[in-house]
Image (tube, rainbow, N blue to C red; front, side):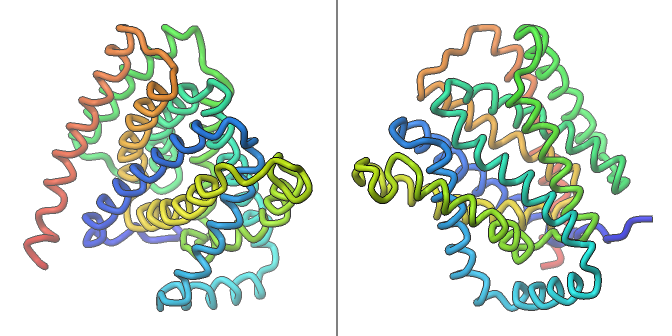
Length: 305
């Protein structure tokens, strides 16, 4: 029996919209990080944690739902302190993912991370089926099958999967399952995760190449700050989508972001051969199936609006 009811169907349309906007913002962040080689990934991670937390602090007080969720979260943790354990685990997982997203573009691993995001929807579909009994429409099943063909080709042609790929595609499903299973799938809970990561973020800023007394100057500081602010907005959008959409649909929509990340990887100088057509062609077909399915699913809610 599910501990949390599935998201309301009426929220599906807005969930799709905010997730697409978030995907574009994450691609912009990926590009900016790749253009800041003089900045260490840990330092950029630190600014992202600090500024994302500040962004949420500016947004959440003006959201009545967020205020209610904050009070509810504090009350639940007070009554059951054991909830801190899955909360800390979720914070650790998202912290590693935030760092990896900054590390990959400047270490020639952008494509490996991008491919992890291609695998992620498949692992999210599996997680949704196992833990929440999500149902797949025929078009979603075709989308999974088409995407699986592209993923299988990439794994075969590359002779295996790199560790950043596995870290993304296996880590995030655990994170989202924890959030939904323990009812942490809200913005105040994410802010609490960032608060847990804040000491590490401040440490990386103070000891980084551009920290106080380092002599590194302030070149690129606005770019680093923009990563933090855009990251805050993008995570708000993604976490709203994860709350409004069934986990399987949320996972399948995740194919939009890696398509954009691959484009950024090419811009940053990583090469794609002709064989990539056999990887990304089926995945683009999966996106087509998904978009058709999304339009069909949105019709009842539009008619009733």
